[in-house]
Length: 137
Image (cartoon, rainbow, N blue to C red; front, side, top):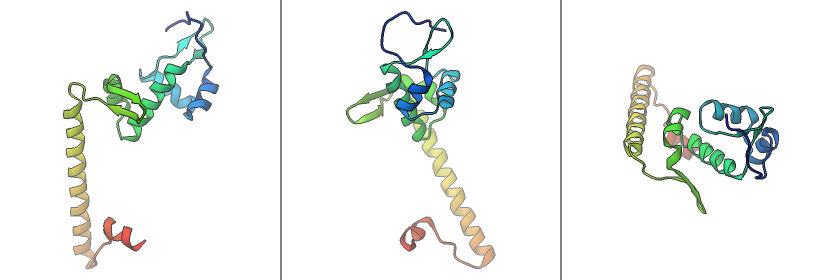
């Protein structure tokens, strides 16, 4: 547990949650997962500063990209926030990890297509594919 030692402007968890749009519960979860390390005062209250906003934005960007907290913990140091938002540099092993995810998604898409085909054969009907559903609706 880090104890507050500087005079940077900080806010407590409720205000920080409001500023970032992330619930206090999620912030505590990020801390439990080792993704976020707020400074604690002698009473144990969490204090967040401007640098923590950037970390939360990076975590949120990685979650929205489909990465789980274990993977985020491994690659959070690869995240960079700039003018164009959050991006990931290709840290060691990140490319192979992303390739594994892409391969898994390709296998899952093939399994869904095979299931749709089999259901169509069993029911004697043609199921609406995602592409056709987009044009119909």
